[in-house]
Amino acid sequence: MNKVKSTKIITIFTVISALAAFISAFFSSLLPLYLSYKLNIDTRNASSIGIIGGADGPTAIFVSARSSSHLFTIIFVSLTILGVIYLVIAKNHN
Image (tube, helix red, strand yellow):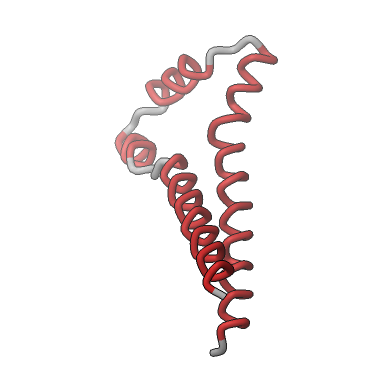
């Protein structure tokens, strides 16, 4: 694979990971903050009541085994930063 094709592929993956990071950050952090401000609802109380109310065995295991969406945001932001660093170094190297 030649260098130009490799750079194009890395650029595409960098843009995709940046979009995924933005979407992940929006839905995991910004949207709940906006809705709680707009509707004057404390989302922490509602989620704890929902977990306690439905805390039978399989449901409790399912809720506690969910992965954190903040982890996806961190991974995609890291990939975006690495892609941008690589593209800047590759551009300055030529």
